[in-house]
Amino acid sequence: MADKTTLDAYEACIGIETHVQLNTQTKIFCSCPNKVVKTPNVNICPICTGYPGVLPVVNKDIVQAAILMGLATSSRIDLNSIFARKHYFYPDLPKNFQITQADRPICSEGIVTITDEAGNTKNIRLVRIHMEEDAGKNMHSPTTNESFVDLNRTGTPLLEIVSYPDISSATEARAYLKELRNIVLHLAIGTGNMEDGALRADTNISVRKKGEKKLGTKVELKNINSFKFVADAIEYEIKRQVTALEQGQPIQQETRSWDQHGKQTIVMRSKEEAADYRYFHEPDLPTVHITQDFIEQAQKKLPELPQQRLARYLKQDLSFYEATILIDDLALALYFDKAYTQAQSKTLINWVLRDVIGYLNEQKITLEQFKITPEHLAELIQLIDNKTINTSVAQEIFEQAAQTGSSPKKLVQEQGLTQINNQQELETIVAQVIAQYPNQVTAYKNGNQKLFGFFVGQAMKETKGRANPQLINEILNKLLR
Image (cartoon, rainbow, N blue to C red; front, top):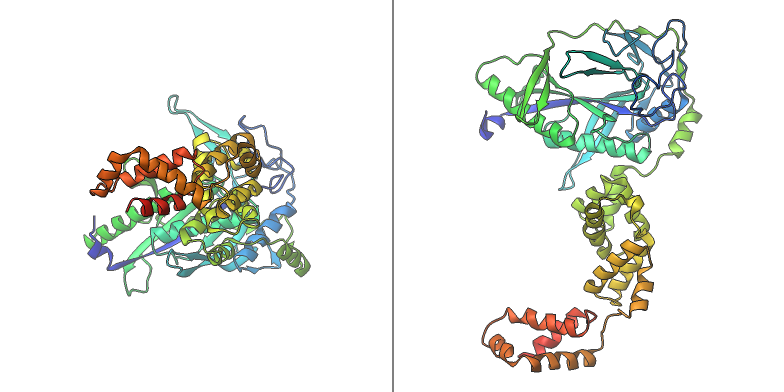
């Protein structure tokens, strides 16, 4: 593979076609429930399975979701968009065509902004956002050489989001896909889960020498189901293409998949030329007319978007790393925001990222099952910040509250765990500890500095963990001179 110096002489041009499954109650053109069903071929009707003579009807919620996505990406929204038939022949496509949008998509020329750790932003331009139906699913037996078709997924509503080849690295591609997913989650129009296919990305990659204007031959990567694997596949593919060009080998236009075990892309099929899908206007569906009032109503429903949330968190003195962890987990972000209204403290984010996430992972539960409410976590943070309890006691209270759902303040009062901040009282306790361990005192004064922690531990033990640790340290430093 090409070395770093060789790679630096080239640039990658990456465009991504992303399919987002929408979470509407019903499918795009019929009244079948829009949900995952394990039993094959039960969530179907004559419309979504393409029986002759049936008439599709556009789900209004799909149009609204598309407009929300368009507004969130500053896209131009076409007031008169048209559905088309895209013809291809596959066992999981019962009509032998897919209803989609071709030359008149609902949204076009938008942008998705990505931000790196240094705070630098880059706009990835969008060619279009359009509405379409999903196909069914082919299943292949590994033992009997048989194939089966499950049509439950046919008619599932999709938004296809197509970017220009503005992405130049695996890191940017991953950031772009995560930003799209976060927009989908903030708009509440889908789950954005790559693992179950609710967000699918087909990545087109080409490389060229820096300074060249013409794009290189593109290779498509398909069927990759995680952000990490997409990034890994892009990194490998860039190196593979540069290596081939340096060796005088032409790049073949083809579709490849990612072999995560072999850590390489492998050929699925060649693409000698663009497929002829024979698009034409869908005669069974009228033009989608959108009023300005409908767009304005959708605009009012726009929530705070990921980039806006990021800017707010940075103003709240969160680091970029802390902010992105919250933004990538909307439920956690909403939990933090509720707690922050009552405890505007830097201590809060530390407890959310360390203790809350740690407890959830350890117990294998979700935030919905977590018994500490945002209000109770804020209460705990206030107890720490105003020095009512120390960190050691706070950890104990956190565990108790997580198990019982009780108020931290109530638990502290019931168990008499308030922090001892009385200087005179603590000096008496520390003096007694020092008197009990004359040999350790001599060793400490002779240079064994590690014994300082021993004295701290003994003092905390005497106070059952309730002493102010800072005061204990100060008193020990004074008495052990």
